[in-house]
Amino acid sequence: MIHTMHLMDAVEVPTVESPGRLMGDHSALSLAELLLKERVQVDDLLRDDSRQVDLIPRFLVIALVSFSAYAWAMVLLLHAAPNGSVPSVLAEGWSLSVRPAVGLWLAYAVGLVAATGICLPSFYFYGLLAGVKISFLQVVTHCLKGQASTAIMLIGILPIYVAVALGMLIFAAPVEVQQMVLSIGLVLPFIAGLWGVYSIYHGFMRLADTLPGRFRDRRTCFLRRLTVAWAACYTAVTPLMIYALWTHFVG
Amino acid sequence: MDLLNSSFVLYLMIGAGVGLAVYLADRAGTRTERCIRVATAVPFWPLYVPVLLRGAGPTSASNELEPLDDMAAAIAQVDRELQAALGSLRGWAESVLTREKVRFGELHSAWIAQAQRIREMDCFLSLPEHTTGTGNKGVIERLQQNEQARHRNLQRIQRLRDRAYNDLMGTLAWVRELVSMIHLAKFTGAPASRAEEIVAQMAAGVEGLSEVTWHEEEGFEKANTIVRLSGR
View (cartoon, each protein chain N blue to C red):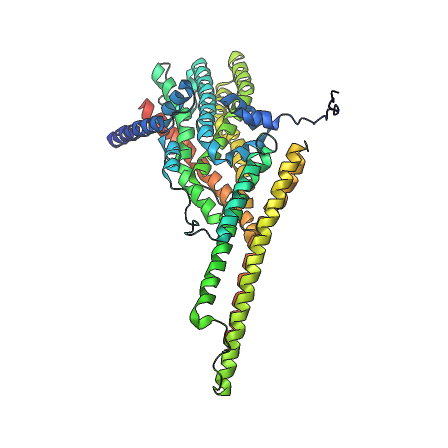
């Protein structure tokens, strides 16, 4: 007699989509998608020491590609603009040759990221001062996450800005208006940078759970202020870095 | 300008060295990924130096103790089981794993610290002058009182030690129970939220253990103060 095994009813296990799927794939594009859709998951990824080594170059690529796209868009707009419309900060070194164009690209692409490197030690010490358990590598990753968030926001607002600037050039707006719009274009990364700063702030605040329980409330307030202070420091350093690089490359 | 140029050259030279180090240190990934890593390491080497130094750092050995007594063996076993259970959360409840990873590190540290404290109390109590004998009889009354107070303190320390030991063993047993619940939840196809509940319970226990240790130390200091005051 053959005993047949009783067939059990299949249990439908609910499958929870997206966070695991997105977190499993860590290419630069998927990271960009995570930064847009699942910012909390990105912060969780940053807490995993084994993944930070992979995340750093990916965040860097996102930032560099986006800043380069922005810089070349600005170069094209400045080339299309009449001479009198070039903002005064660039007017001295600007011309239609290759050198100023490359100089502007390098100034923004390198300057925005290099300023992060300058401000990193202070960010690390602020974290230690607040009592947060964070390694230097985690600080680097958080800062680059902020850069990548800034870059994605910049790419988001760039088409709108380009459309406005092109319209202004095509319809021959007054020179002062053109100069003002082009000047706004030069500070566009700093406008987008507000999003990056918020991203860093959000990520750092989530690290407050590493603070000892007895001091958590007091220290969280202190951590918040230190993060804002660091953001102000970075905002002050970055334009100086960009201008210094521009001056150096253009001569 | 010459200073800036020479600084720039020096910067790039360091960057080249760091780029080479990045290439040699990490050969994982596709060729394109390696090229991107090296290419970005040259101009942005300050961002890669922590990556290189992370690999060179020694793993934390400050809590490694010499001979494996019953407490160390129990801690090692529970730690292994806990790591296995947390490892099984990958791909299922990964978010809670990365969120609470730091706390589980603290849990291990708290166990080690508690075990070390118990050992120190054992060493102290095993010293010949600290054995709780009946004391010298026939000594004048005041000395007898001091002697009795000393014995009482030693008994308190013994009770403190026993309580700390029971707490440690109790915590280890409790974590083993939670670990088995994680495995049970995974094999019965429970939703990820169930694992998150259990892990959150464990993580909450970490703080509880830290708080208990802190209160015990505080109570011990107060007891010491009372002993000093009554001994005068």
